[in-house]
Amino acid sequence: MSRVVVALSGGVDSAVAAALLQEAGHDLIGVTMRLWPKSRCCDEKDIEDAAELCTLLGIPYQVLDYRERFRREIVDPFIAAYQEGRTPNPCTRCNQVLKFSALWQEAQVLGADSLATGHYVRRSGSAPAQLWRGVDERKDQSYFLYAIERELLPRLLFPLGALRKEEVRAIAKARGLPVAGKQESQDVCFIAGDYRSFLREQGVSGRPGNIVNLYGETVGTHDGVINFTVGQRRGIGGGSAMPLYVLAVDAKRDQVRVGPAEYLYQDQLRIHDCNWLGELSPGREERVTVKLRYAAPPVSATLRLGQGGEASLHLDTAQRAITPGQAAVCYQKECLLGGGIISEFGIPAGSAAE
Image 1 (cartoon, rainbow, N blue to C red):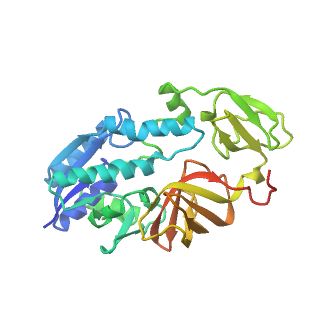
Image 2 (spheres, rainbow, N blue to C red; image 1 turned 120 degrees about the vertical axis):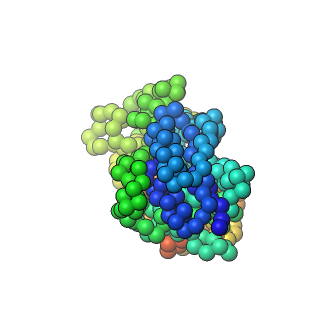
Image 3 (cartoon, rainbow, N blue to C red; image 1 turned 135 degrees about the vertical axis):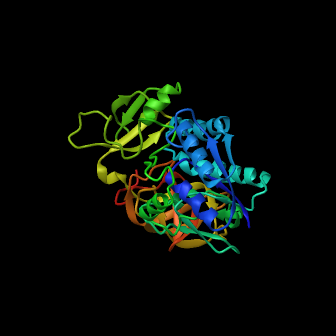
């Protein structure tokens, strides 16, 4: 019988993961990370729900106080990214730094052989181990896991990877789990409303600057680049014969660049802070499919691996509003290859160099 630390969020997915692991004969220890005072995930009510589940299953339970580390390693970089004109996705970093790397360290202290979560993703094999998309395409969470350490893969268990959400709900109901009907959390867990309101609550204010067109001409002013993201339409102001969209955000110049919708389409981008779960070498080219946002459909592309954790992608079909700060996550068929953070994009497809 192996000892498994199971990460419990207080929701139905991690609860069913724990129940299935126990039925498979594993010796379980439940843990929950306390992350943020007011959160959509792992708040005080979630901790109570996780504790009730562990009592029902008869397994030990611990709450880990990660609030200071969450602030330092997740929230502060999130704020800094907006100040630098990028649009971050903190969930990928949280999975990398806290929900897997830090939790595995805790699991080792507890004498565990494996770490389990309720993510909808599959692990295939052990030498070498791979991550595959979850069977439920609507719930597949592999996008958020591209940055976890490859060395951890053999130690990870994902009991829900081959299940669909409705099956998970049915399992919870059939086993009388107290969270069987609980609604799932959405969006960034530590933001209760609009991200701009959150930044203001954290004392972040932007510097005023100019809104410029394709030719560098000033067409308006703004109160701070933190209020803008690529593809945005609202908040630019009027005075144009055609709708204008944010094409780029330049925090160093406090400048927001705008133009017509067709200039949002690009087919080249660069990524940095790359993490590859397979054996990839600098200088190689790979045919991949890539997701530029969690909810975006995958598109075919050529991946060119560079040095120092950088790479470039050439998309077969130009995509709308490629956004610095978001993750570009690459796949080969069902296998998660890895990815990185979008740092910049190339010349808009179909336009002349400017």
